[in-house]
Each structure stands twice: as structure tokens, then as C-alpha cells.
Image (cartoon, rainbow, N blue to C red):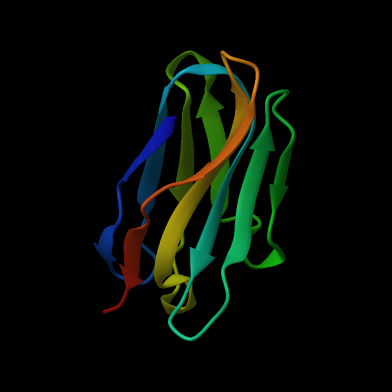
Length: 120
């Protein structure tokens, strides 16, 4: 089993910054994909940013230049630095982690979600 613990959400004014963290724990052998998604009320869950084990990143057009995804492989943790936040960034943010367990099975897990609210 793999557990994901997210932290860092909250209320911030437009133009402000937040940093989200997602730590994975359990019988993990390797992680090859980590990503952040978000879901606003009434909307589907959309990709925000992803990062591979080799460090290749991908961003939604709406966050390019404002958000930065990074990972600490030693800590099995992925981060999302969010700058210049806009009201339209308001959503529940979920991390997603995919990899392989020590017993050999592949896994894919979602975090519990953390609320980000951008409002004055």
C-alpha cells in the first residue's frame, strides 16, 4: 500500500504564492511519475503539472510561467510552487503518484486533496 499526504493549501490573495507538498510512503520500490491535478466545483479534474523520474516536466497552458513542479526523490515528495495566483486557480488540488512496489506490482495513488482559495 502507498499513502500520500498533501499539505500547503489555504487562502491567499490574488498575486500571492503558495507551495503544495505531497509525500508518498509505503512499500515503494520506485516512483516514475508524480503530478498535480485540480478540480473546481462543477468541473472535471484537470492536469496542472507533471514530472517524471528523469525530471521532465509538463504544465497546463494556464499555469505556465507561474507554477513550478519539483520533486525530492530521496523523500518521495513532489512540490508545486504556485506564484502570481489568480482567482481562477481556486480549486481542490490533488497529487498523483505512479510507480512500482517492492513486491513488483505497479501502483497509482491519489492524495486526499488540499483546498486552494484565491480571493481578496
